[in-house]
Image (tube, rainbow, N blue to C red; front, side, top):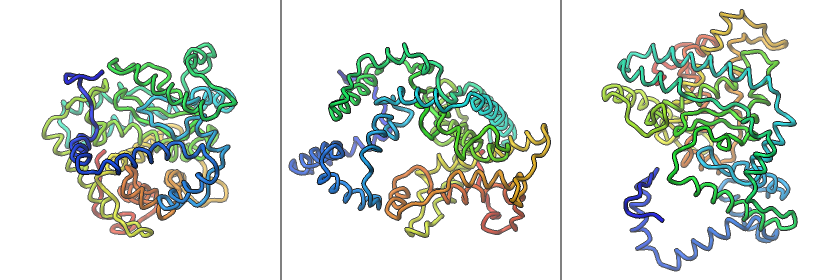
Amino acid sequence: NVNEDEPVNLSVPSFFEELGPLLERTPNRVIANYMMWRIHAFSIVFLSEQFRKRQLQYATALSGRQEQEARWKECVDIASGSGVRDLEYDVEGLAIAVGSLYVRKHFKQDSKAIALDMVHQIRGVFDNILSEVDWMDEVTKKEAKKKLYAMTTHIGYPDEMLDNSKLEEYYRNLDIDSSKYFESFLNMNVFGTDYSFNKLRLPVNKTDWMRHARPAVVNAYYSSIENSIQFPAGILQGHFFHAARPKYMNYGAIGFVIGHEITHGFDDQGRRFDLQGNLLDWWAEDTQKAYLDKAKCIIEQYGNFTDGQTGLNLNGVNTQGENIADNGGVKESYRAYRQWVEKNGPEPKLPGLDYTPEQMFWISAGQTWCAKYRKETLKMRITTGVHSPSQFRVMGTFSNMKDFARDFNCPEGSRMNPVQKCEVW
């Protein structure tokens, strides 16, 4: 039960301010139809091909996708919780069980140690950047460093995932029947919802291993309420990372991601939380104004980028947090790599490629965001997404990097070495 004295955290208060008037002026029939549509949209993937084809027509109009996902793939995604929820929410389905199977069979322990060492080095670089910036007052700078070193790191998977007794305890209230697919799906949703509701009004348990128990995903996260960064086992492989690769490739790929997530703690949203994950204004007024001026440069720069496929300008406001993290992340990782070279000596070039190790760092970083979008998907991403389309995550970010311009001999004033550059961190 929620009474009038219950504090409720609304991420978008204006939504609820406008919802009441919207419902009042909307016919009841429209509201009823919308509610039924939401129910059917949720369950239509479980129906016959006739209904699935109608859903595909909707998906084609929305995203340009013209092929129906194979049922086996949908089943795997649902069972594994792939793409179901973000880190700020609790895992659903069998994500923890699937993750346990994945790390037992595929994850290499040396990857965890190497990645953790990279986190320490890149964190140290961010410390140096905090010392260098001239727009922060000393008190705010000191608090920023406290937050930086209070940031906890979760790499690969929690050890509890390999304890079968803990897995059995977690799933003891989940009823799965292999002969009843839809009922089992509903049970998984109820199970996840009950788990979330049971944590309401309780303090955030920052050591809860189940919050970091989705290793079988290719993603990385920063949690503002935990002040933690997480790099699941799934991203510590493929083109992101391999223990035997040259350091310039690992720093360019996973290092970029590590720096990106660390910087999220100090982007337009993350900076509002203190070292303990509390929503608290710990910035001096003048420093905050200076930060907003720095962020404004990023907002305007990306807002002036035009996508050639759709003709749309990017939304610099919606994407500012990710753009700030991209710019800070690649800068931090590059510096960390250069520090590694100073300590261990230069690495050899890759055979058959006439690129310097520094150039290979940037190539590896750029390759991280290689993607091809359908026009409809790209339009939706630009208008509603918080990430800039991939080409701008590379071109926009690298054009702000003096190191990139030097390593590739870009003439001053050229597209990738503009005179006016933006920099927050």
